[in-house]
Image (tube, rainbow, N blue to C red; front, side, top):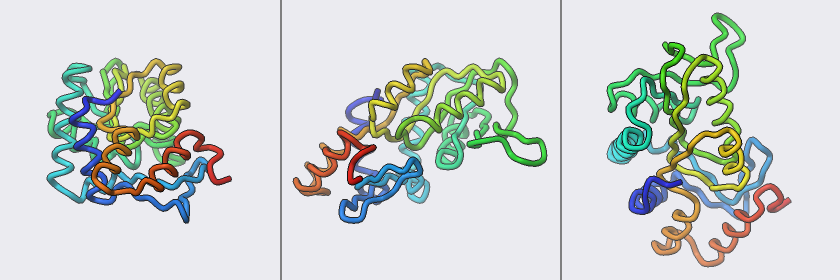
Length: 213
């Protein structure tokens, strides 16, 4: 679910203003999953804009404390959520760890980097949710390290059915600042996209795995 409607609208507008959201239906992007997409979201862009990153860290901090209580540790998912996760942990005065996609091949072979004790409560910070697979891999790594994962917060989600199902099956609560529906509503209202582009984005959202194949 989204934090609230006002936060969703403001977040969507900020992401559009700094071109964190890019639209290119004529030359679609290819995701790591192999899906073709007319839209690409790079939320790491927020780190380059102090007022926006401060807004995001403060909204995260307020929401985490309200919904989950103050955890023992904040965890960021590598690599996109490391920066914002550190900002949130610093703002809340909490320890920070981050989770690699897989354990290192050398040294201590860590997957969870930083100091984490068994039994500590953790809230996971993400920048973007697509299918949810990589985010939930991070959750599993934290659980294997002995953490009690209270939930996850993210800047933006595409809201795919597969992601909703994945989080439901994993019994992990996901709350996001903004989502695809609020983004489209705002983009049309503020003339960031045309009606034709809106139709393309809606068609893609209905069947992202088969769009433009």
